[in-house]
Each structure stands twice: as structure tokens, then as C-alpha cells.
Image (tube, rainbow, N blue to C red):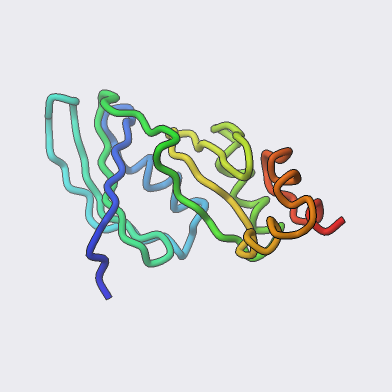
Length: 149
């Protein structure tokens, strides 16, 4: 089934080179990341610009990279990763915050400014446990064991 709606993500990278962005996400998503052909749009008002359609876990996205920053990502848009266990949470969290930064309640910002919420698949169940809301409000990275006390 094809996605009827494809999110477009506008990045800024030195020289407008999208290959650095593709490599960054391929490094963390591995075989769950596919990149199509890079389309060079040449010089635009934002400098050199390239496009590439990608798939992450079979969800299509259009990546665009421009030489000059135009519109930065912000908290109004985030991608949520529903993780199977603490090990998977740790993997994504560590990768995105290494050159990015931590936020609250499982939210973090990667090196390109894209926001992620890295959570367990059963987050709703954990939040419904006694004191679940208080636990998440005190967390940056989600630690599943803290809900089970």
C-alpha cells in the first residue's frame, strides 16, 4: 500500500549535501532504512538543494537538504519510535542525543534538530499504573523499570 500522505522534512546541511543526512539515519535504522535516488535541484534561493525519498520502517518521507537554513524543526512536529524493550529505547536515545540533546518525557532532539519521542510500545499501560504520570514527568529518557516499582 502506498502512503497517500508523505511527510516532507527540510534539513540544512553544509553544501546542501543530502548524503550526510541519509548516512546519519541509515546508521541508526540500518535495514529498516531505504533511500531512493538523490535529485539535485541545483542552486535555489536557499543555496544548493537536494531531494531524496526515503523509507523508515516502510513509512515514506521526502528529505530535502538546502545549503542555507530556512525553517528549523521545532517541537510542533516529532516522530515517535515505539520500542520493544529498554535495550531498544537505549539504542535510539543514545544515538540521537550523542550529537543532539535530551528533553523530557522520552523526547529528544537529534543533531539535525528533528524531534523524536522514544517510548516503549506499552507506554499507555505504564502511564495507567499507580504513579505512572509522576514517573514520566520526572524522566528524560524513559526507564521502564521505574514504572514497575
